[in-house]
Image (spheres, helix red, strand yellow):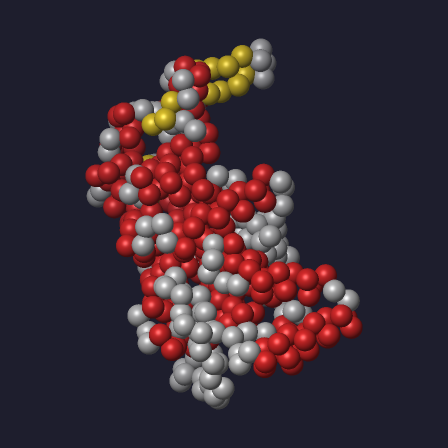
Length: 380
């Protein structure tokens, strides 16, 4: 399972008014000025296209397409295909080939490297050698692309039914290290870890939902993406703090802040990531006084889905995950009885260990410390 939100659209508009209305208005004004100022193509010093509002005939337009597979035209008058660039041959060969000089085309728009990775993952096409060759040298140009645009590309890569394959292609081509350096760094330092297994299992679950026509949300995706960096931060803290909500939230803030140096993560999704992680200690240490309130919280289902995923890779108790599953299926009176029975069993064995959300080694069982938590200064 995976969290669903009121808005099922997996490609929400970047810069929506709920996040930054001033920025959205300024963007609209900028677009109007650009449309009025010129119809010429404008490039920066590195060759990246800043504006291209010129239009022409089909014969001229075809050379502005990026890949040959996107360069086919259909004539509705005689139902014929017009192929200027050998598109049919490349499609039949399942070959991905840039139109024009690959080095120049990538410099014009570095996002074409991500599009190449996406088509490779989605269509199973093989990059033509000349199209593949410049990626290793030019991939750092992606750091010059607006962060909001890279957010859109992230969703297209991971939330359109081929996320697991996209992860493999991005890593193999060194593109994940440019988009999300903290994620790549964790995966390199912890190959085959439980966190990597969780990441891949979560992407596979998302792919299944997309293919089944079910809704998916960027909140869950960014929870998966940033799990490694969050776990890395937590493991740098004293081990007796790993299960503390304050430590977990600090880890979320750190990972989100680092990720947003490259890719915009709208506030509505970053807050969702915080909530999903913050609820994990409560799910792993349920108490009768809180269980019935917890299950009614808006983010409960998302946090529960994360708990299920963690249990599947050995990072949380399978028995406890099953208990939460049964609790949701139970009636009101049965829920109360289950909560009371759990509290009684908990007391008889002296409490549960705080496993937290880190990707480190299993901790030794220890009694839960009961203490008043103070909110750090400045935290909203």
